[in-house]
Amino acid sequence: MEAFERVAASRAKGRPTGLCYIQNIFTDFMEMHGDRRFGDDAAIVSGIARLYEMPVTVIAQEKGSTTKDKVHRNFGSAHPEGYRKALRQMKLAEKFGRPVICFVDTAGAFCGISAEERGEGQSIAENLMEMMTLKTPIISVFIGEGGSGGALGLAVADEVWMLENAYYSVISPEGCASILWKDRSKVKEASQALRLTADDLLQFHAIERVIPEPKDFSNFSDVYESIKADLYKSLQQKLSEDETELLQKRYDRFRKFGADTYITVKQNTTNHAN
Image (cartoon, rainbow, N blue to C red; front, side):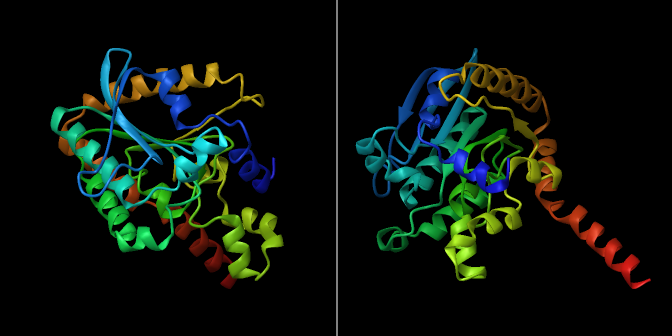
């Protein structure tokens, strides 16, 4: 599939949303509401659950299923209080030694005036800072769209996994086409240039795993079971690590971003000059 076909698949009607993953992977889920500063953002669902017998904290961006639900969830575009709610649950997870699992699916954080007035940028930045030093394992799974800081606010993790038709990009293909070509019809070219597919990001070592998915959204049971088993195995291993080792590996993971690409470009430039 071409890059834009992957983008279209990530947005397809009927694609499982964050709540579908929570309901099919975890048991005893208890949702926690609010950020204790402003309100409760329905675009982010968070709470505690069990992964087999393991207590975990689960955070998911939720787009909604019906039209009414999509409007209620703001189509998965969170306000500042959504990111603060997520961070509150992460800090509680750290306090009680629970691993954190995030499901990412958003075109981007809400960019309206109300969000800016309440500190959208600051709330995302605070998540990035706090997640980098959170003293408990974090795994983020991209299940659909992964747009800009709205996705990154839940993706500073020890490992990032992606479904094969998810995408992760600094900007939407439409936004990129409008800026670079001044023409939104160039969306296919933008999708290709952004290198936003799971295969691209695995090649760049920006993610750790690509999860195959079926063509039929009604047949996702194998996907849920695979993610469930892999999460349990990975988190068990990370919980056995020393806290200092866990944080150092997380730090090193982000420090190496771009290094391989830089070396390759430098080598190609040197060879061309010679």
